[in-house]
Amino acid sequence: MRTAAFYRENPWFRGDDESFLMIYDIASGTSETVAAFDGLIEAPNWSKDGEALYYNKNGRICRYALASGEETVVPSDYADNCNNDHVLSPDGLSIAVSHGTREDGRSRVYTLPLTGGIPRLITPLGPSYLHGWSPDGKTLAYCAERGGEFDIYTIPAEGGVERRLTDSPGLNDGPEYAPDGEAIWFNSVRTGLMQVWKMRADGSEQTQMTFDEDRNSWFPHISPDGLRVVFLAYRKGDVAPGEHLPHRRGELRLMDADGGTLCTLSQFFGGQGTINVNSWAPDSRRFAYVKYRIKGIGEF
Image (cartoon, rainbow, N blue to C red; front, top):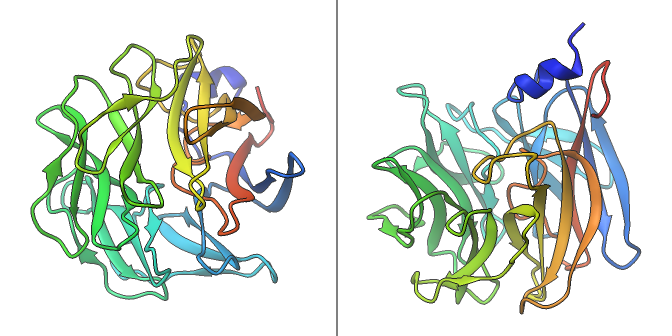
């Protein structure tokens, strides 16, 4: 039987994970377990009609109907190695996924109908990890490694020439559009610890939004009403600033979109896969996330 020490030393081994699909209610301050899975699921998106959650599982995107508890697989043809960076289109009719191609194993961004279909390649270069879709449906935002540096890029949603928005040394990740389309939120390690930042949609006016001295903060997600931002934080020392590991103690934190009040909502065992992409409900009152246990070990 594997020990906790094994998982600390091999954090990317996910073969013994148990996953719990959760919904956090802002008004009541409570979390509800929606479903439990014997295996790994990651990164829920909430459907535009509020009726379902979408997540990646075994390389595919799955739909979980909240009313019935029915799980179905979104047919995606050859895109069978989807990771936890996927986003629904603003009109709720399509999904963009990050799929590791067979040719070189690198993640690239594709789009397909939410009901299923043949994926369309959007980013010929890899690795590319999708995080945002502009409210007008015209542009995708993603983290990509080019020339040894991870930065934030945008590209037309129909494909075309990518545009680099950040150029600071170190990891820049998690770009997500504000509901008005005027800003992109992201996380950056440029000041030492990982912090939450935002910039104008053209990459200008890059502004630091969190200033924690004891946490690394990842993946800011903006509520549909534009008022709140939820993100994942690791305690300083639990991970290196540029690491986003699984099998770690983490916190879900909430801040006002204007940079005001900031608080911790929940502490849990999770990390990579918990809340990589936007998972707010359309009502801006709830969001989904995943927490984990390890078979025979639990949490540590």
